[in-house]
Length: 369
Length: 222
Image (cartoon, rainbow over all chains, first blue to last red; front, side, top):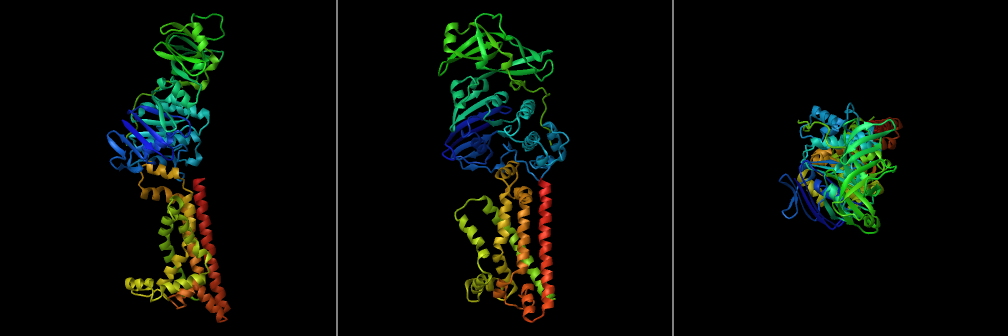
């Protein structure tokens, strides 16, 4: 368990606290200047708050009250920096070995395999692409055998195609990560894909903290994030790739037809459904161009600022969010427990809104050395 | 050809480099990364030998090193010899005079090592010394190397300060630069020409070595 509290007046006013359980991935999200990276640096020992405490697995790294402040190299922490910060004079495998207490070339090679960097162990960082450097940085952070893994905007410096691939790899890697993981990101979509828990920061303060799905349906949190694209993640199974470039998926509550999904038949995926793209109907609609109609029940309606309300619809054991006007909600006379149909346009689900469900790899530990 | 003078010059340059190497690493590193009160002043003081005429600088050192002064007496008590007109005095003067040549390039070298890289080294579990050895020095090395080559070459050619502080005692303070002047005064142009050519050769060699080494480092990192 990683426990963090930090208060400071400079460089930005900060007053925040969070905890992360082992194996859990917590995303720190918020606009730039909110204090996300500063908070992460406090955990690593690269920045010292005026007052605060950092403890992991019962080991205190920082306790300003008790005068404890371990130097970064005495904290068992793995950090992936925004620009990776690989040592330019070392090869990939040497970079990984540099973080080991007892350098072991074979263990380093196994770690590079684990992050899907095959056959490039002897290349220097300058000879690797951004995505490959990111993998080396992750392997190096794991080589430290960290009690806490910190990722500082690790996907922001690569192009979108690479980022999606890396996201999928991190989801797959999750089964190997048995330490608390903290991800700093300004990309809400990324946080929603990867994180179990979310902490929304604004101007150095925690606006909202909790399970990702909960935070993502919270109006206040969303306002702090300055986003309109509220979305829910709905699990689905790939059933069939159709000749017209669509893929048929089965989800709780019905069938989805989406633009071609890059996953095999039977693969478990999660589909990101944007709340403002959802239409609700009281009865099963007919004569519509929309292909995707899911049956569900209204669980609650949350009014927001402005003309919109957020309708939470239970579909199977999951929740789909619909952002509709107050007027529409009144006309439909939506009440909790009422049966509704959720209508989603196929084309409103972008390809990068489909993420693999967690851990397709058999669980195994990080190679021991 | 005055071999004693050449040997003396090489010895002086060698000692100067040996003493200034750790100084350049520690001072260059501190000036590159740390922010402390009086940093500007420290940088200005380090630059001073660059703008002061060598004879003026040598004169002040001569006065400061004198037998009656605090520095001179301290040296006498500690090492049992005198600073003026001795090889030891030359080394001390040479170290002080070469500070800008040793520290400036090293500082530039360390400035090229980003803060994120140093933080990454710490987060990889490296202690400050290990980080210096494994990450900082290999990356700042071209700067440190340039500093040492400049110091060496500059010491070989130094004239004004050596003459003021050391005089021209054969085998003790008569360096090759002074020997050349001495030969010219004696209308022995041939000896002066040979010795000058040797100095030119050594200087060119030093520059070539620096360029070759930094080119190799550049290839390694590119």
